[in-house]
Length: 598
Image (cartoon, rainbow, N blue to C red; front, side, top):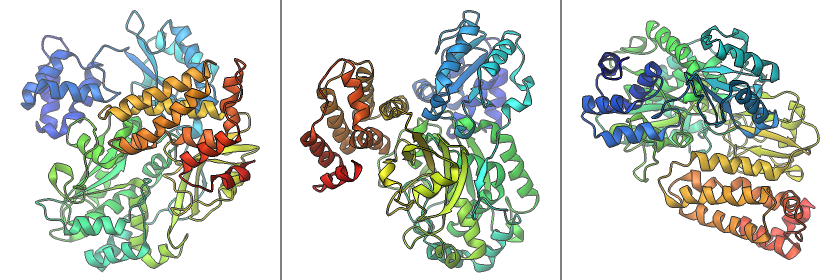
């Protein structure tokens, strides 16, 4: 396109999206795909066409890390930088590719051919190290030989689509299937059962099942659907949160690949219950390569009368779904941030109340559930609430899918009833000499070996699905430091405690890593934890110090080793450690915790 005349591509994009400002993120994504980046004149023309302030359009373009308001390489290579990728050598591989191509990490080659940088977890932890090319093509199972080939293909300007197909093969790695990962029911079977019961009867089954949301918060699904159903509004909306951004989690990727019909059917059942006509799948930007397959599933269901107008011949039951592709923002996994993004804005969390079930997308009552929750709802509609409630524990019913990665022989997906021991999962995945497990991603819990008898359940060890294994070769200080860098990178910047606090945590940990730290730095770190936990705008900042808190408490020697490198005295004596444990657990009996650990 001629920089002086952006109209042809812009006109096409505007027409496709009906000049709807709520679709701004999708328009920016498509314009960047055509242009390679988002030049100032294009943003200005788009703002003018949508009658939006230019500052708003620029602000949205600058918020999402997959949008580029400065030129980038024609080949944009992003290495997944989750800690499990690092354990497999991703940093060395990235340095090797940069050396071969003559480009600095995070920079652009002088000829504009390539840029290489790191990005947050890409949801491929079971087959890393991995990278993304131009935000939509994955390359898995990287090694030195593959890096040499990638460099040569880029130098020869071979289009990524023409690279060896096996490089982009994404294996599902389903290791243990219980209910959700087993053979799927026939498309339409669960929906037919729901229609036979009626909306109230189906809602009663979901409530009887005691299904709780699988995105991490664990809110009762039946209660959420009931509140949305009762809320007044010109429209009701159903949203599937497929923004699976928690590092170490990849279960939704597999469900969207193998069980998309069940997920869409669960959304359609929710629409029947709450009276919705409009639905969205918010697909994380890192899963852009799944877009065409999801669109094909939607088209097939429309053709079969399972989606669209008069579903299964029921006049008045109209419901359809659009796929909204994100642009790289971990915070959009939070439901109000996700809705802001759907509405074409920066993904800044909203102040609640009101909650989305009352005031969601465009002010309409909106149900937001994640991929696994909708899949479970379809099975409950088919088999009944009592069946689901009989699985798991009384407070945590049904099964839970775990994305297992890290130091184990068989990474992949493992589905178990709630109440399963941590140790059982470690045995099944072939973990050996394990010192720690990070459950639920960086915002979850870090468990040490004496806790492996605990159980996966909302009343014991809750989880959004990530299960990262670390054996005794690993430095748990470095694990915590990697997670701290993740949170600092992903802070939306809205509130000062999170924006500044996450950066201060990184600086202190980097200081310790360089051997320049003292026990004063440890004091500052848990002061920052206390501050952020009680003052941040949303859960990202509140949970950002979880890995720090757990590793200081449970793996103190990992921190001491960094202090001893400059011959400091040990950072803690027993009285110090008891004080830390009390402060971080809020419990007066923290001494018993330390005794169990020793």
